[in-house]
Image 1: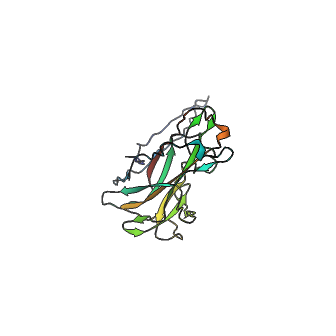
Image 2: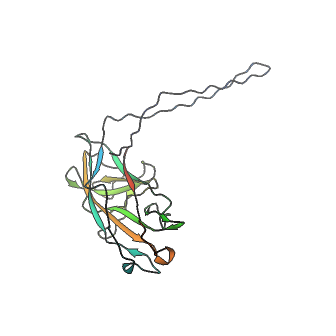
Image 3: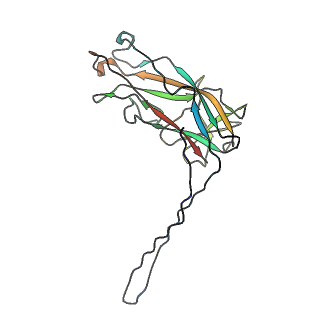
Length: 218
């Protein structure tokens, strides 16, 4: 279970006292605040792992990247009957090993020496439902300003690890996420392997990626 809770810290004050010949004093106060939410939303996956098994080098390109078949797994969020505004983000547990990392959407599959083996993307299919009704994705980098999440064909909104939040609403024109008690959909996993001419193929080698999906309360 992966959760990200905002919590409140007691107010903390720092006092700084400076002395002069006139015994004048100056100080500054730092306030630390937050909000405790009574709602606990739990994300779950239909399976904790996807295994592509043994792949022959004969099925991979020597000079170009090779896309592997897309695999899917069910994805759900349950807030135990209470509605809350929340969003989804990710952590790449193999960060720094992707072939491309500029977009924040490519998760790494590890390295062979200094060479990146490959990468994969995570998208939700266009079948996402919130509280039993169809919803669409909204994205935000600050949790305040929201825009429609890009989609392409059957490739729904991307889940990213660069801090981008993926929330949900009734329409793409919405300016805020919809509070939900349940969310359900299909997670799409699309890996690709780098060119073989960048890798040592004289012996077996493994690729391995790991991502943590996080519920962010808004």
